[in-house]
Image (cartoon, rainbow, N blue to C red):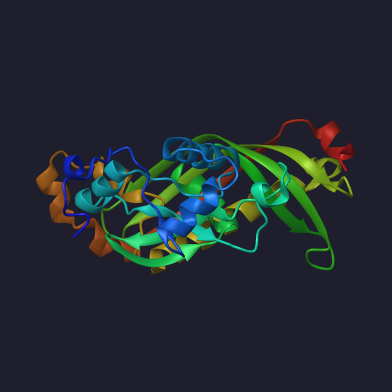
Length: 274
C-alpha cells in the first residue's frame, strides 16, 4: 500500500534512500541521530559517504528501486539498518566518546519486490565490486600457514571494469576488473616482499573466487545484484525484443567468469608496512 501511494502525496523525493531495518524505524533513526541530532538529509549523506569509503554497505534510492523492479534489467539491493540500545552514546557519556546505537551496513537481496536474502559486510564489498559501484575500501585478507595464520589489510580501489553478457544460447557473462591495492597493514611484510614471486597471482585468484562465490549467493536468491541484465539489455534494439527475452527467467542459469588484474601502488612501502 505504501509503495502504491504517489511521492507527491507522501512528500518524499524519489532521490530518498530506501532500506531495510531489523528494528522499528523510530529506533533506527533515533539510534543514528542520538549523538548529533542530525537531520535526515545529513544522515543519508553520511551513509552514502560511508559506502564510498568502505564499500561495506549497499546504496539505492527510490527512483532506482522502481527502475529495478519495473524494468527487469537488475534487482534492488538495499542497505540494512539495525539498532543496539546497549551502545553508550555521547549524551550518556557527557562527551564525544560514545558510539552509535543505529548502524547501517551490509545488503538485503531482493528478487523484484521480495526480499530473498542478505549479505554480510565483507560479501557486500565484493558485490559492490562486481556491479562496479565500489570506489574504495579495506579488504581483509587471511593467508599463510596454517590457513589464515596471517592477516593483511588491503586498501582497494576499483580503477576499471569491462563486462559483457551473451544471451545466444546458454547465458554467460565475462567480467574483468582492474583494481589497485595499497597495503594498510601486513605484519609479516610478505605481501610486498613476495608480490612478484606469486603473491600477486594468489591475491588475484582470491578476488576472483570471492566475486564468483558472492555472485552465486545472489543468483541463488534470484537477485541480479551485480546488474548483468543491464549489459544484456544493450544487445536489444527495442523494449519489446528485450522484454521477449524475459531476462529473469534465464538469469538463474547465468554462468559468470570473473577476471581480476591487481596492481600494488608501492611495493617498498608494502614490504615495511606493519
